[in-house]
Length: 75
Length: 238
Image 1 (cartoon, helix red, strand yellow):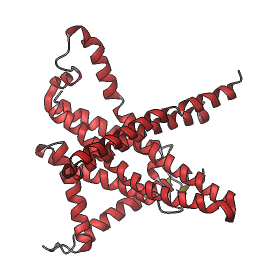
Image 2: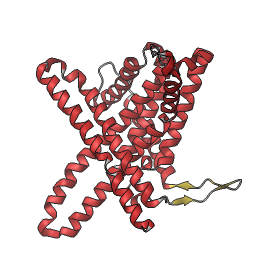
Image 3: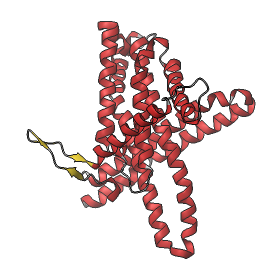
Image 4: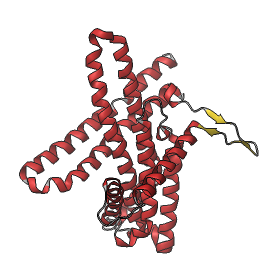
């Protein structure tokens, strides 16, 4: 296989990281909604934790992007 | 891409090292000046009943202060000035990057890595200074079978060493990916023209709102993770 083709395949494979980020963000918001509907009075106090979890989960997907960019442009 | 390019504004050569004043450095100076101006002007009167600007300054102070108090505890309040400076600096850099034709300093990994490496080294020194050689117990999780220890200690050490990398890459990747996405959708608007560009433009507006949220969130996450690392070093409950 040519190196360029392998590079493109590798970059595409690196975008599978989005699966994990999607699952993570969905779990966070789904569970927050579930908890908020069960106990609405406690929901606002946990909003900061929700955003923190969202940002942490989103970042894992972006690590995949960084790997893809490294494969494409550094090697 | 053009928006990520570093340009030399004033050429400077210090003992063979390239220490030119770049647009990156200029935006850092602007951010520091803006924060200083904001806090000084807002708290100039220092009235008991705060005005609009003063209450914004007090809110940002209280926001970071409660973050440090909740995550590090009251004995961590002596590190509050550092956390506050860090939060305001990263927030100002992220927000300045959202201004059109400006430069996003935090979209360069070397800047965020320097910040994260400084935090990592400082936190490790604080841990050893506070607990002495006992700080190494931080890497030994309690309540695990003795046979598992060699494996777990290695995992703990590796996860500790990846902290500066994950901290810096998180901020850098978020800012770079966000600005790249805006650029891609901006080119869609131009490519689709008057007929179809409206849908892409609507997306652009929504994404700009999301990017403003991300710019704030990442500054918050950067500061809160610093608090958590500091808490680990000060109290090391494992």
